Length: 109
Image (cartoon, rainbow, N blue to C red; front, side, top):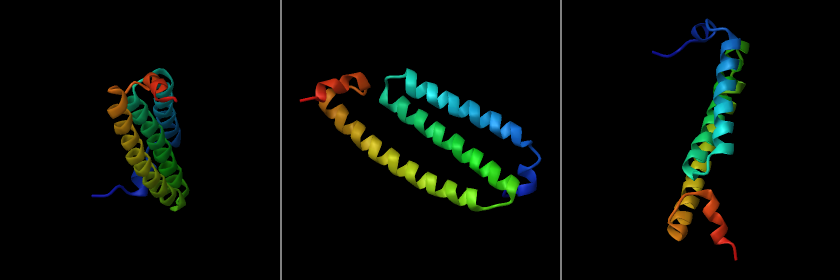
């Protein structure tokens, strides 16, 4: 069973804004505080998904499908970002034997 617009609108928009702000803040803290490349990638994905959820909520409240179409394109870009990021991470791991981003200084000429 799919979720209808009426079901989405039963939750006040302020709750979506608060929840997405909290998720985005957790993602920002993860990017700024952690040195592990995998945690940084997960934090970036958390920020993208919080923005997607907020776009979907605004789209449902305005009865405009443009936000949901935009979310689809963001998900495509996020999938490409993950594929390229993980490929780069594998290359870095093969040369440095660690995924700590501070070890990337060894890759300088």
